[in-house]
Image (cartoon, helix red, strand yellow):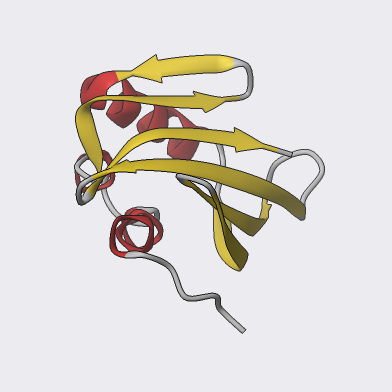
Length: 108
């Protein structure tokens, strides 16, 4: 059963399989994404990060749980694809600003 996700978070997962441009538009201009020990600052860097990941791996990302921890929305996803350790459950920590994502940290 897919969990109910808020507007910006739902838009993120809907855009996840789309173009890197559409994906990056889910974020504020000065958003930060932290993934695999790296921080990507701003939409341009986030778009580049998405392009690099999409070029390197083919995968699906299925939300399986969602909870609110204070101001942070935490979504647990099952990633399945051609990467080491697949399938893998990751947690996505979203902080929102209006209808955009201000920060995202992805952790095991």
